[in-house]
Image (tube, rainbow, N blue to C red; front, top):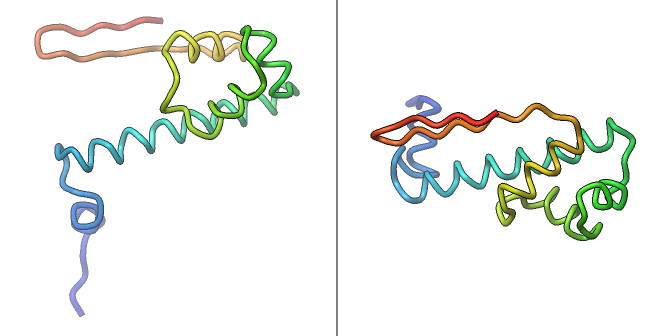
Length: 103
């Protein structure tokens, strides 16, 4: 029986690193993790979706969508949510000719 490394399985099922398929998967995974982190932190702070929405000026439905799919949200909204949750945010962007860090 042939064994496979995790990398080999990921390459076969998701796509090789650097391919559009793999990049999309990694992006969606990160957005899902951000949504789950927002939900968990909101609950730890004993806030309802409605209360968090009031803190940042959006409807409860937008908080629900954010917690379930953070991929369709602006950076501004994310920063307002994290600020309301008293979270420390660092944004690091690496471009071929420069690095940018915020926070």
